Every structure is written in C-alpha cells, then in structure tokens.
Amino acid sequence: MITEQPNFTVIDKMSGGSSDVRVLILEVIKEEFPEEQNEYFYQLEQKNYKKLQEIVHKIKHKISTLGLEKSYVIANNYEKNLRKESLELATDFKDILTIIENFVKKIS
Image (cartoon, rainbow, N blue to C red):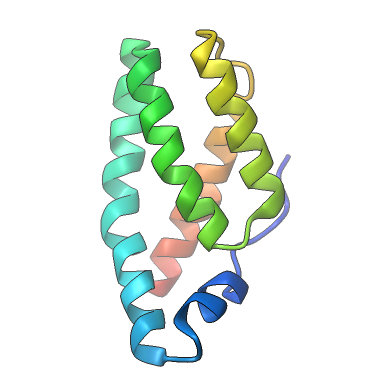
C-alpha cells in the first residue's frame, strides 16, 4: 500500500517562487491527468502493452512533479515490466493513480 502524498516541493522549485507558474503547472496536471488515466485503463483492458508503456511514461513525469519519489520508482519499474508484457506492479500503479486523482480533485 502506498502512503506518500503529493506535495508542492518540486512544483515550487520549478516555478521559482512564481505563483503564476505554479498555477500553470497545476492546470496542466488537472487537464492532462484525467485523460491519461482514462486512456491507461482503456489500454489495460485491451492489454496493449506498447500503449501502456507510453502512458505510464507520461504519467511518470506527473508523479515526479508531484514529489512522489517512492511512487516514481514503482512507476519506473512498472514501465520496465510492461516492456516484458508483465502487469506486475499494476495494482501499485493503480493505487498511485488513485492518489493523484484524489489530489487533482482537491485542487480543482
């Protein structure tokens, strides 16, 4: 079970203290993440490993941006597993998606 929560540490570093840049970064996450999450679950149903790798790779950047260090390691390993057509770590990755989904709802 994943217990870490998103934080603004990386976003604050990226924004250089600019609240406008911080808002912009959060807006991108709020806009892109739900689409990527839906696409992930669709491709998972289809067992399209190549597309799953691409989506996990995109989401990995959001995981990093949200300061989820342990989750990033899991996502990175999951991406490697998908290259071997293995769904090992899929449950952990789903937990990460839920954490981000809940975070996005809070900042909306």
